[in-house]
Every structure is written in structure tokens, then in C-alpha cells.
Image 1 (cartoon, rainbow, N blue to C red):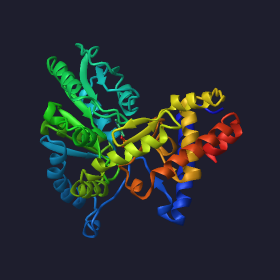
Image 2 (image 1 turned 30 degrees about the horizontal axis):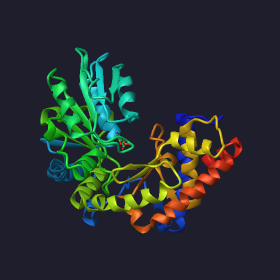
Image 3 (image 1 turned 30 degrees about the vertical axis):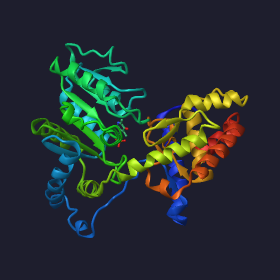
Length: 384
Ligand SMILES: *Cc1c(COP(=O)(O)O)cnc(C)c1O
């Protein structure tokens, strides 16, 4: 049966990677990665010989410090294998067994790494999207703020400051999950860096809205970062030298231009797509939510018993197979957002005109409408 399960998500992802593999073998330029996660690996020729177990960290951790501090603020930065790894390491340090974590985010869904990490310490997890309901209690060990969600819903500066103030008044440390927010908030919304607004810890993904490798970059006070670093080493959560070297290159090269320039392209794409679909704007692109896919199917007279996230996976796989467009519901890790988000700040968006994307949506949706009733055909699209 088709369901929303981590195992089926993995199978779908592997199928997507197979399709990508065969397109790339023909020619990388046949593929359009519009996820906004580019996974660039900007290392210099002379860096490669230094990628050793001990020489690597000695060189690249030192180079990372000033660049990371410039990007995030704080006293010391720490490179982690992924943003998820950093969230886990911080929770392992800061949350006592049975302690509570209170999470504020502008809109659901939550990134799965947060509740899953809390589960590991048998912590109690509470989340809020309304700042007026936000509360910390005696059991609260940590407050997490998501600066920008997986779907790029961005917190307002007012809400951010309110949550910080409420947490500080109870002496509860605040960690900001600024995976994409460290750039979206600051560059598009002119908000201060998380640390400058009073956060104790911030983590960002060097893969999101910058051409760096998938990895987590954390900053905060030296004392706290050292505790988290030690925990990360104990569980193998830290970034290895090649990853740190890639982060250094990405931070050296980082320019806000492409993010700023995406705004006019996003407007153009939104205008085209909204004639046919209930798409919504994101800071750097547009998105189609799973519930809107179901509504769109219903308006075409098609009812489906499938979970909306499975439908999103099918649509994303069609976009990939038929139009070579990569979106997160096709390639995402289990638990990733099922929203189809088109990010016009992606490097590959520069090679595409808006009409191609518009036609890809129309064509893919027609195909979805045709096959969604037929489980066998859906399975073939999802798993090959
Ligand atoms: C992407 C993201 C993460 C996790 O990043 P990984 O590289 O997948 O570990 C965590 N939180 C938010 C809000 C994200 O957007």
C-alpha cells in the first residue's frame, strides 16, 4: 500500500537519484535543481592535499572561524555534519532527561530533527506558532526558535524578540534553527543576525541559499560551543575536513546578489502559475502545498484516498522524470517537507525561463490527474 512512511520515502528518494544519475551522465545541463539546496563544494586545488585527518582541521577550522563569525556573529563557530547533527548535539548537551523543549516557529511543519532529537533524550516537546500562546515553564531546559521554516515561512522580528524576551526572563537558553533563515531573514527582511537579537546559539545550513556543502554551521558563546563540540565528537556528529574546507570556500564566495535578484523572477513565476494553480509566494520563489494539490484534483473531479504527502511525492517525481526539475518531495530525506517549492535563487534557475516551469506544472499535473487512481502506475512513478 502507498503510505507516508520513512521506508517508502527512502525508496522514492533512491528512485529519484537513479533518474538524476542517468540525466547527469548524459549532461549535467539537462537537469534543473530548483530546490535552493545546491551542495556546492568550492575547494581550491591547493586545499586538496591538506584534507587529512589532523592537518585538515588544523588548517580549515582556523580559516572557518572569522568567516563563520562574520556570517553568524557570536564568539566561536563549530562545523557539523548537518544542521540536524548540530540540533541533536545541542539537545544532548542542554536537555536533561525528562526536561522540556519549547519550540516557536512561524508556521508548521516543524523540521523532524527537532522532535526526533528530543525523543532520544526522552524529553517533553511543545511547539507554538502563536506568540501570544508561547510559554516556558519550570521544566523548560531549552527554547528553540525556527527563523525560517522548511517552507521558507519567515518569523517576524517582533515575534523573534518577544520569544527571546520571554525565554530570557526565565533564564532559559535559546537556540535558533536558522537553516535558511540566516540568509532569508537578514538579506530579504533586513533582520539582525540571531545572535545579535540575543540568541545563545544559532545554526545554519551551508547548503541553503549559498553554494556550499550540506553541513551545519553553529555559533554562540565559547563555553557553550565547547560543550557541544565535545558532545559532537563523542557521537561523530562533527564535520570532517573536506566538509569544513567546502564551508570555508562557500563563505568566502558568498554574495547576497542572487537572493536579491530572485525577487523579480519569483514575481514573474507567481503571475504565470497562479492562473492555473493555488500557489503561494515564498521569499525567493513559489510553492504548491500538498493540500492545494488535493483541492486542485478535486476541482478536476478526482478524489484520492492517498495521503497528501504521497500525492506531493508523485507530482515531484513526475516533474523530475518528465521535465528534469528537481524539487524536495522527490529527493528529500525521510520527513522532509512535502511542499513543492520552486526556488528562483537556485543556481539552475538562471538557465530556465519561467514559461518552461509553467508548462512543466501544467503537464505534470495532467499526468498526476490521469494516474492518481491507479496504484500500480503511481508505484511505478515513485519507485520505478
Ligand atoms: C534544512 C533544515 C534543517 C536540516 O538541515 P539538514 O541539512 O537536512 O540537516 C533543519 N531545520 C530547518 C528549518 C531546515 O530548513
